[in-house]
Figure: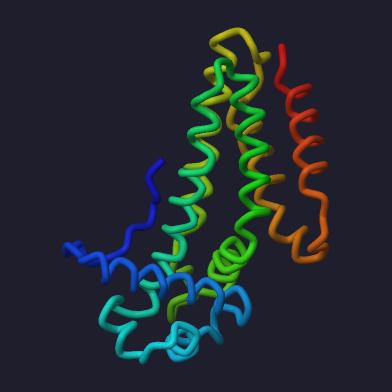
Length: 207
């Protein structure tokens, strides 16, 4: 799946520039997750990265481009982790199980990054109060793609007839609730959570 949000600046970059950008993005993730979007200034991010603010300005047009890359990198990591698992399965039932388990596991293994993107979604606004990063569009796309998997299962006769839109939104809602649950209970048993979700939606979808 391709990220909805793309960073600006399409020039070819050297390995050193790519590595430096990755370092800055990682420091931005840590700063935004810990301090929140508003307090994670370019100066704070530069301090974490051990570089001057000017170095960040050289690699990114500004904070907006930097946070867009924070979001892009999360989407890219999610694709890299989950897509191979899903397409490796032979039937839709197993694909749905891999989808749910993979998403829950990803939230657990990328907690800081997920928290940073959550903080961006909640707080990053322009002067008119509109979100700087349109995560709603990305979440809608994720639901649409899950709907295609569910439709595939119906076409194969593995899933019963139901609204794939409603089911996809429901599945995504319990997955997207994980950051808030982890914020309240960092020791939450994600393995058990995933197991219950797999059972729940297997019963809800199976023919």
